[in-house]
Image (cartoon, rainbow over all chains, first blue to last red; front, side, top):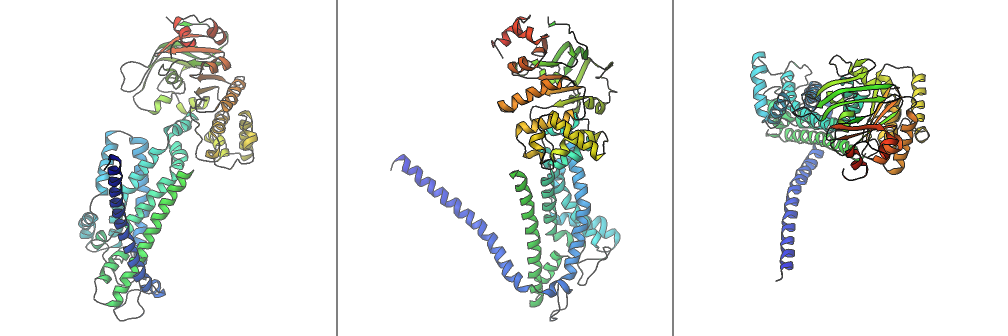
Length: 280
Length: 261
């Protein structure tokens, strides 16, 4: 066997192995999606959106309570987490730059990003739920905000850093004060990237279950009072899916499907924004 | 010792015993420099890479202040004051001393908004006046014909040469007294380059110009005075036509005849 044929055979072996590995990886993704779509679409009906949870056996049963609870909890976390994260990221990129403090904040936020979310749930339980004496929507939002913050902060920091410093210099050279340089030039240049960070941050927290179990807990009825325990899609899904009743399990599939589609949409949108930016 | 000629015109800027040191360095990057900058003239700064010409240029609008730890010594006199003093109002200084960069720096906004940016910073809100001055600046920068039908379009859609002329329009729209050019054509093709050069020459009736270039022919074509810098020292400042024909310093002669650099 010549040296060249040996190399060709080796090349083919490696190529086959990596292709098979890739197919296995992607295969699981499509398997999950397939099962979700088959069971989820089957479980979908208008009552899902119009009715609240009912005891097993009732035909008029839905997820309205969980959908609204989810929107309130994630919505509040977004309203608080996004501006905080963007401002903190702006500090790192535009003011702190390479200083000790800024580098420390970056390191801590990287660690926070990989912290198990159940630990953050336990933390919020200890400092919010226990002193208040009851579970609440507030506590759920606080937990999700804490999880979202480092994601938004780091993407903002990274995206602002990608804006060329010559662009900042050009604005300063026209006599612009620093805050105007940041708001009018740097933010505009990083718009698509920051938006992507926000979408990915929201997508990440929307799928969290563990921190909500400790904080907003659950409610089988419609509740819009953030001071009370509140249903969410994830916790509802957990409860229904693990129940012995078939109609509840169906609701669990519906919740899983709706949640996955929501997060998938956010992820795709985020990627589209980045693509659009690169394409320019 | 350096040969610095006396200029015949009034000077707009006067550099006196000036030194500049970058943050973290012990040795200054521009050494004890004294030179006048002639009013309504074009002064070119030439020299090999790393000679300090861009560093010196960025001192005139205190660009180095954007990064902490940089140090100025000596004086740069402008309108009777030393602009290196700590109390200098940098916003006001940069309105009077504008700058064009090596790479075009079109802001991520429309062509109109780019040119209006400096005027809006100064509080000009009147739409008619803003529109008139944007048009005038774009005409002065010889780009009006190309962009007049798409003023609302994103400025990043323009070519490199167009973007650089847009940046010049943006800078001259606020009528600075001095305009600093930092190798404005090094990223451009020859046709765009000659367009920018013509523009620079036309502008000198209205403002004083300092241009850094590593292209000696460019210095010879556009400038009235040329300063040759080498390793942080200003070796010679002279009238351009004299300096390129009969340089007084040996180093200058070696550089312009291509012996090094």
